[in-house]
Image 1: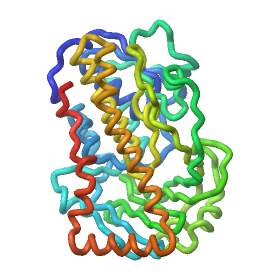
Image 2: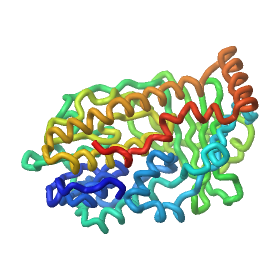
Image 3: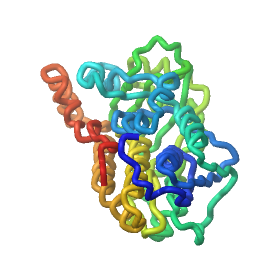
Image 4: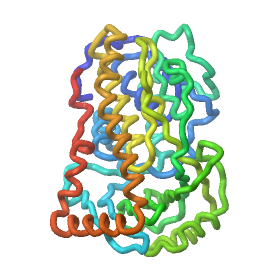
Length: 381
């Protein structure tokens, strides 16, 4: 680990609620600094029904500092580029990650493989993971509770009261299809009027697809509702390029409504703290949900290790993380709008992107220096 350990966390009991990306990464970071960590997970097995994740360099720096970079190599692919296309499949802009950021790692990984990697590392660090352990309220006798329990967090309302999310008028299908491994490992984004589709290959002969469509109404939040692939194919029937071949290979898909949750007004109270989606849920239009959770985990552990005053350490964590995560959530919201432009606005925007990609290809990527150049492990609170 890059930052020196002070010993402030030595043998301190920590209860983490949730064994997802946020909870497991936090458990590893805390245990490596000497904490006595227990993770409570409601599921009977550690598994993820999700699909692909894009892990950008800001999170890879944390995983490397935790000693997990080598373990990432065989279960993920290094992304070469982000390719923006219109709905017909014509190129709009290309963000060449290898050329313009040769030292930075952007990796594509199945969520289940990342969860498995983190679970093994947590166990090796001495973390106790208790499965089939649902939490209905914050345990009153735990001296430090980390709420890493996602969108439907139990810890968040204990700090903030109940909140009602609002429907964004967007729904999304998520699916995996077989892939022969011949495609360049890059993320492709096809942008249409009121719709867009994202796809990229994964290690192990799979391709991840997420397709988003604007819709007037939705009854439930979550992404476990199974849908007929024919509905997906009908919604994107006019998309070109490789999209139709991909969609024809879809045998099973799930659809879910995208709801907007505000960044939590209160992240901690000196005993409980929120990380990941429990603190700052984000729409999936910047590929930073899991990345923010990984960043949070490192900064939380570093703050607690740097200051034996737990209340002060948690307050410092919130102060450090709130501005950045709020900015990322806003940037994801903006991408949702930009991907779905219609009429003349769409023509003008795509024309400007094509010109920028041709005349100054590195400039488009430099707009995100603030995002990808951030190094949480360099922080010494």
